[in-house]
Length: 415
Image (spheres, rainbow, N blue to C red):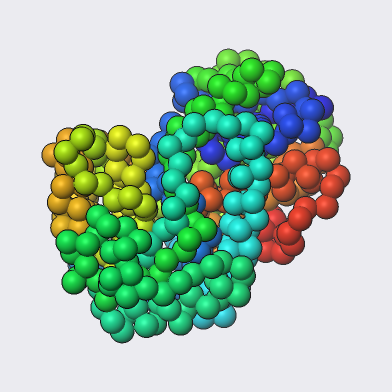
């Protein structure tokens, strides 16, 4: 079939890979000039099944409310006049129960573990460079009580197949020697030896180059405006550069998915949640972290990528605003300077803010629609890099009429 993949973020690129692998004639349509230029541009890059907790938890409402007068909260709430914002927040609030958090966490962990196995299959077939690090990830705590609570909480992920080890401060410093000078600030850590990291943008762009060699077409600088339908089917994708005929389409437009979906009668609860990152260069004199991790009580995630270190923080519920100012990065930069004072040139950071396409549950929306040849692969949220390989394989399986390898309960528009 001739299949149009709408969007060239990590969800669209991995979907194009799986569809090309199945023998389809694939065209990827992207508004930006290069792949991974929006949400996937400078995300954390942690490939982290062992950190697949649902954001919508009993603790979330209190954190969001506290953020109205404190700027150091991991979740920030900035009220908007947009009615869609309040509808989405109401749905998010309804997920903030212990029961719903457990269900959503299990679904996320199952999807992420499957995605990691698909990712390794992909790398064996298409060995693209992405500055990957397979040394595990370290999730450390400064407060003994918080560490004990986290160790107990991690059982839900262990039950879903994630290997998680508890370490004392010496064990944390052994896992990453760059933390040795500050180990006295660490009460304990959870080490996930199978978690990994890598530059999502680099992977997406190098994969796009590999896919071009396999015959995949890319239309960059092309904005999708509508879908032309004929009865219960999509017949063409309408863009600002003209129509593109297709036998089918996969919707991977991230935060812009709902606008297009509404035109064909679909109401999808995908809304942007803003994140911030810094990327600092590493020179020969620096002592960067050897593996990625998360300072859990500050919720600052970080990872080394060859000649650079990236740190990310904050989930800001503030609509489609992508602007940023120096104070938005002050907290994470302070934490990184404290943890790794010689880890990078912190005075030469690249600053970025992007929009994560979140669902209230934190799980993606996949599968068929009421149009027989339109499929969804959207709402991957803050774990798009980790989830994307699974969601792409599932999408290809559904299009081919194959049964996906994991249950799709709670992961489809019909759920």
